[in-house]
Image 1 (cartoon, rainbow, N blue to C red):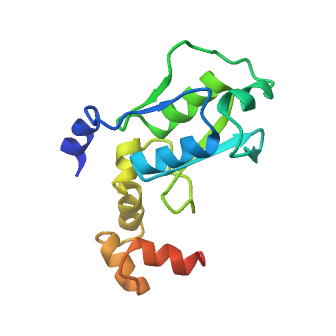
Image 2: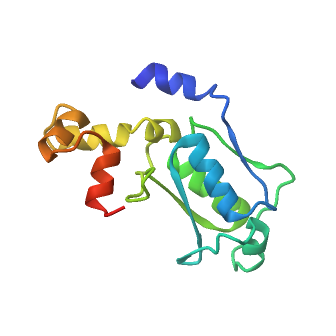
Length: 155
């Protein structure tokens, strides 16, 4: 995976824009469609109302917000931390990037592209002593991650 995948993330055509007038639920759906990951949006310490726009949420924040004339652009080559920091700076909102099943937050040092390719899961499985994620899933009795999350998290 590694080198070539990370290189191609820089040129990935599915860069992602966030505009202030978009509803939270629209941005979340588009983010999932583009990257296969979940974008959790918070207002303070609670999840934001998905029917609010980013601009409406911004009006209710106490943070100093930097409204740029440009839309916010997210690329697959950006780290999770870069994405979270950019949204905080631009909209004054806290976000977290979670896996596709919204069961855990992806560590800040991974890029969006790496998380999309589940490299964080591969690294975790190796750290747990497995050759790869397939070996872990086989030991647990699952055919793939979709089945794993569906049964482990009753979804």
